[in-house]
Image (cartoon, rainbow, N blue to C red; front, side, top):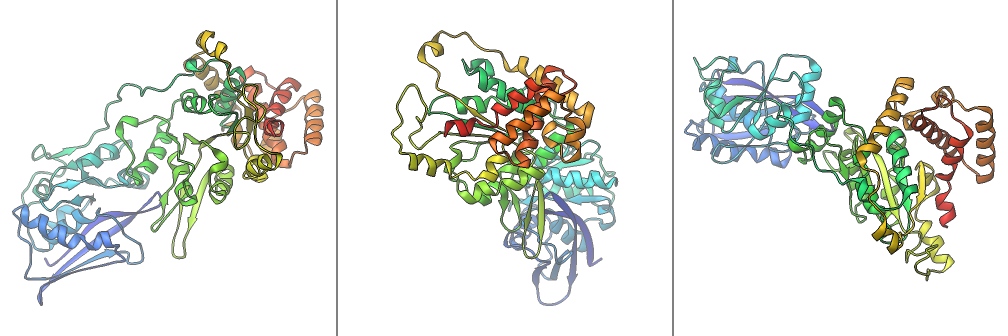
Length: 511
């Protein structure tokens, strides 16, 4: 048969769209044509596939006119993932393997010139797409990619090390589908859970009782946090320990985060169910933070999905990069639109930012005097727009710790002890409203963040005196709800509101 069809998938955002690789062999002048909106990487597959087939000891139909179509034609295709399905399509069209046996399988893999299979990006996204369809389809991938794809529950994933390992499965009279012919072909199983990844412990932080309390509140309610303090006061140290306070990831959360990391080739099986912490440098562009490119790829905010995005030297980031955070902080996702395509990536991250109060860093410090003029301070703090600051729930000061306290104070409360309270508070919120307090919107806030009379009066007075926007008032209310959950209170009381107010005015005090 001179025509064969092989199934594969292309990546567009987190969506893994189905692609049919159609291969036709015809008489005529020898040629190898590849069509179907293929990127340069895909077009280079012609030489990789030719060399891989020949070096594997198989016959390449060099005397035929070969046409490969990647359908649908209007879907962009990139990377070397189509090498394996193109090679199998050519072999099936030439009659060297049984085309009918390819049905019920999908393939992806990059070929080396020797025929060995190299890993591909987005293996988890492909497995999730198959799992979502609920169709009994086997996914054949390079062995390394198969390890991560096998993390999807119920997925039937097979790994192969070489082109010949795949070809043997589809020879006429070959082994039954799924039966291992040798060690090079195997059913991929989820990797066993390894030892828990070492996470820096909050017990190592001495002093900073107020900052530790703010971290606990932020973790319990999924709130964003801005720390303001002089150089060396411990802001980065606190941020690096924040992920250790968060509840353990569910399987669905872990799959979402791992799928995004897989799109960038940054997923490691050893990090399975470990909340990500992304710390981009302040020179990062807006595209690096939110994602982009052609085809669109996720940025740091999506790689931090279900984890922590730590932005140190907050005002030093480009203004456009910081303003791009406003939408995902509200919606939990980012949409990257291009003329022909649009891609949507999840971005439910917890923002932890750190900054100095002024260019020299010592405004308000008791250890050193500030040498900045009022204009310099105003210009520095003015790099952060009001709308962006309004979307950050907690603003706290992190003063420098005196040397005597640093050396003489015993270790503080461990992360594991704090995490117990965080988990209990988070579970109270989930039982009450099905989501974390930070995610409450509109009428949900009125329904679930119930204030007693004294608390309502206090909040009215604070909002009026401090000039809060409607968003700022609602965020203070959600903060108070989290503080009440940590205290095990059914209603929000005046004391809870008073503490929440303190976390909404720290930057104003620092200025």
